[in-house]
Image (tube, rainbow, N blue to C red; front, side, top):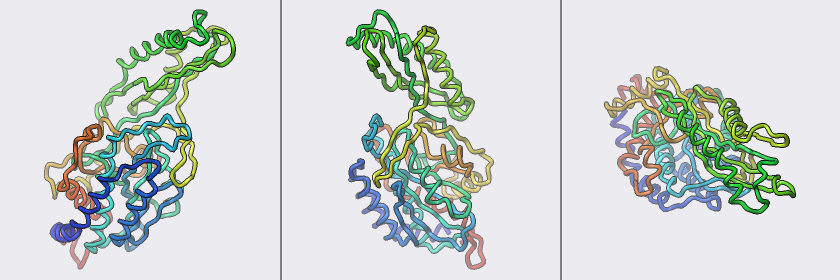
Length: 404
């Protein structure tokens, strides 16, 4: 099988290189992501996918049919883009482009390789690229809750994310919340002097900074984190003391924590700073964002990715790792320490066995000067195809998939 894949991959290399150059030269934004999605869907058609569509949320969905609809596998990459500006505090870092284009390349061409090699699959294979904003995974939710809702039970998910060509099986959670303090905050606050308001906010910021030094640790996923993302000030009625301010917090958290407990603790910290004065209202709530997809569909999304970790002895993990070791004996199982993925929905919410695999390392995401090599991405193409075939491939001509 490996020799056959090598031969077919060589036949696809020229087309692959042209597509890679096209993606690398394309700066994705909300204004042009529809054109970017069309580039992906057109490439799937050139690779002879059996069906290709773009759904109402803007997910690009390519299908390679198996001999039955049992045990379908879904491979997921993502398209990062900036906000549609409905509420727009969502940030998009241009450096993040490197974090998703290699995943798109390897996932689309792994499907193309299996199609070209004519290797039989027992179940259908879905290659999907989902739109995503910072901390808003509206695309993946629509994909599974609507577009793929009526297919037979999905057996496995592969996330095309940077893993250094190893298998990753989980990461910390991350969510954004805001502490809002409203009312008669202090007699020394002048109505139109924001600098005084910032002084009133500082004790709470200071207490949050202290809390960030003593957060839980998970031996597999690493440390929780707390970072002040933004602050805001509003005058809520006439009078020098009637004010509202909010502090927006970006919080990484491990499975030992819950969002409800984190919010309760945040409110308690604020109450400890400002006391229980009559007329003073303090709340801590998860941030939500109103998002308009490039297809025009509007979503209200909570800015939260749950922590997740699939057991290293899960059958899907073991099968995938064993097939990978045939190509790279040094391949291991690990965890992401810095990035978040759609496994927060596919495994943490839906319970579908999920792994991550791809070219590059998560540190590359923050380094705009790093380019993942063509050779490494082609290795990811072949390895992803091998992992897929090991899990849903059918024996051919009387031989097992390992003997082809």
